[in-house]
Length: 132
Ligand code: HEM
Image (cartoon, helix red, strand yellow):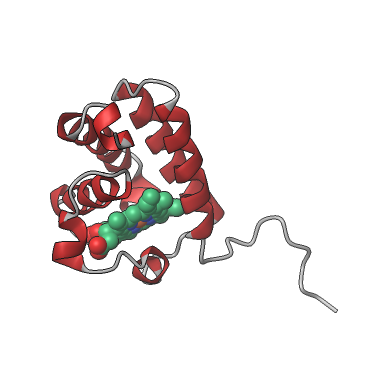
């Protein structure tokens, strides 16, 4: 049985991703990265992607092709600050969706690694000045 099925399938992933986007909607700096006025299409893409990643139906790839997440995030400046905001909303959403252990831990693990991999822009913190 896949993680997708173990945690309750479609209704659980709907709750998870919906709770996540409520967090994004209320987070002005993160919200500003999303180009569309309506977050519903972005919500649908993330829901399809996570459904597929955790072993549910592969509608995401049928509609969008290979995920290539790093490439698809290139247009958006993902700094450490944005990554941490994204992560905070996702951790809250895992909690709000009532995902049981040990699956919740597996999901947190994956999100942490994926979010780390998607950072593509230096926000200037934590580096010595580049003066000679
Ligand atoms: C680290 C911080 C992250 C930021 C700031 C960020 C931001 C964004 C933005 C602005 C978009 C475009 C919205 C749209 O689809 O219309 C997007 C798309 C997407 N993001 Fe992220 N993202 C982050 C991390 C992640 C992670 C960790 C995942 C997966 C676990 C993910 C999965 C996706 C997917 C599946 C899409 C839609 C791609 C498509 O067009 O098919 N993102 N993200």
